[in-house]
Image (cartoon, rainbow, N blue to C red; front, side):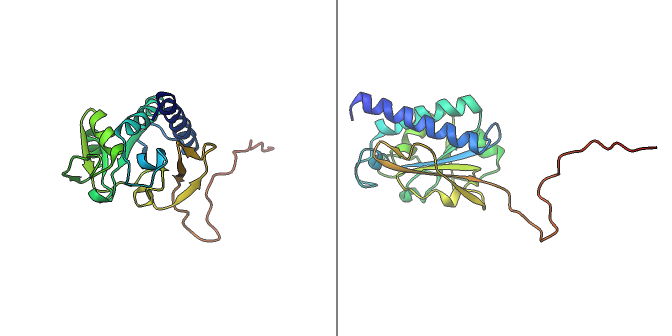
Length: 194
């Protein structure tokens, strides 16, 4: 890919990540999962033309927005590593996640996960997470790593490179029945007469 196209990819992914981060109210202690097919970004069929250079550009755009808001990231590997997730060891330990052993490479894990693994300070893999939000670039199927109640989110930018983009934010389950209240009413001044 040409350098100007790579720069466009970085700009596009940064815009999508920021839009999702704002919609999901992500900040410190919140987790976003990212799945990406660099083959799809390049206009090829998933799993056929992985490119770590594209993965590096995606990572740079994602990491820029992560730095702005302070949320945590998990990068989904491909099915050859059972869709395990690359994340910082500190995040794995803080969330009490189970570590699995592998090093993602473009042919087993995918180029995005391989690029993330090489750029994180202390990378490791977890088998699963329950993220607060997620972005799927190229239809990699991230749903298994989202919290239980996922709400589709349609970002303004619907393609990164040639890959379709889908996203989701999550919310807590609404419990209770017809008498349940989900938000306190605005507080009113209680003027009483004596």
